[in-house]
Image (tube, rainbow, N blue to C red):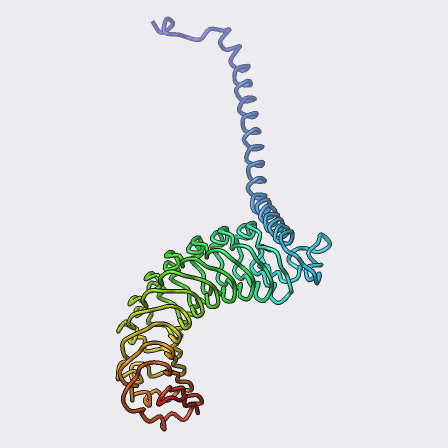
Amino acid sequence: MFSHLGSPSTSSYLTLPCMLRQRITENNVVAIMLNHILVLLFISLCSLPLTASFSSNDTDHEALLAFKTATNDPSSSLSSWNSSLPFCRWRGITCSTTRRRVTGLNLANLTLSGSISPHVGNLSFLRFLNLNNNSYAGSLPPELGRLTRIQHISLSNNLFEGELPASLSNCSNLLSLVVSYNRLGGALPLELGSLSRLELLAISRNAFSGSIPTTLGNLSSLVRLYCGSNGLAGGLPASLGRLSRLQLLAFGENMIAGLIPPSVFNLSKITVFDLAANQIRGSLPSNLGIVFPNLEFFSVGINMLQGSIPPSFSNATSLGYIHVGYNQFTGEVPSFMKLNKLTLLGIFWGGEEQRI
């Protein structure tokens, strides 16, 4: 019975060592192969950051070369931008110390012209872009919205045209956006209101038109808002009254009409208030100098304001400039004798402009 169940024969015993040797040899081969695979995997994993670094650096290098190709440089200000130097040593370039990625591009005041290459959007570590006081033209590329680490964009005093790209709303780390003194136009994108970290927005001296987006009231970190000398129309949004950190509000020389929303007078940190040369109606609150205790500059001249000039101006003891002329104010002119810092007082009263 036992034998029938499979008792080993002599030939079985003879073949067993060969089978064991074969199995051991196979196991060794498998082990060696596994070791090789593990070694290769380790080497490849170790080389990944280095390969990625080189690839990323190549991306920055190519983006900078594309930027240079789109730039006219009559003064040879970018002569260092060549293969004889690492790009981190090129003029105007700042790189991170560890990864050697481009974090800053500062080419202000270099008499440069041309256009901004869309490849600038590939500088994925860029935090600072300054092209102020040049002659760059054309439109702002939507690819700027790919710069998710960017904190400061400064493009003032150039010849840029077209609209402000809505894609800039993707730059969630943006702290300052300065595009003043250009030829930009069209409506302000509603998407700007998503830039919750923005502290400075300067779009003055352009050709922006349409209404002021109510979404600007969502810019909860905003400190300074320069929007003067454009073609903005409609009313001043009441949502601006939510900007509790705002110190400077400038919408002078536009086509803004209607009343000043009462909520705006809740901005107790205001130091500069400029709504001159618009079509604003209504009156100023009698307690203006109390609700704006830090006021230094107040200009609402050349509008259609009525009522009396607030006597509470004297409470804002830091005031150095007041211009309320060319309106329809009535009543007596209040005393400004307590305002020791006042250097200019503009009041159109009785047919003449009074200045001190």
